[in-house]
View 1: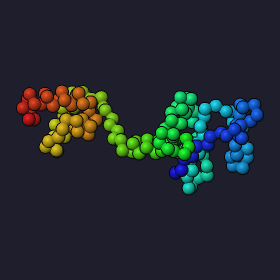
View 2: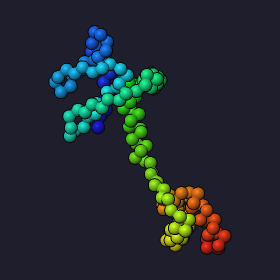
View 3: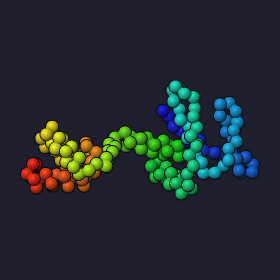
Length: 150
């Protein structure tokens, strides 16, 4: 998928300065002029899709600063690269859903986990079972006091 930024040029800005014109699917479109940035998404299976993104002027200034600092040719490149990095991070993220369970239920599940795995870090147990880390530590401390785990 290819992303590119469509930024209004002074040639495309209407005389009153309040709208910009651009061609989309063979017809001219007038759009209010503000700090919106239109990102065009291209996919081999689809034609073009426009995704308008409104940004605060400060963010646009940061994009311009990053463009200049990193040597990008356009805002488009900065936005495209930023989105690509963000999506890569999301793909690598591990999402852990924490369940609201009682100490008694957590103890039962942790014991069953330890029977299957023999040993494990408390954080791994909590992540795998979806138990709040504080609850997992409390249960493990209780199991240690009882002499069940060492």
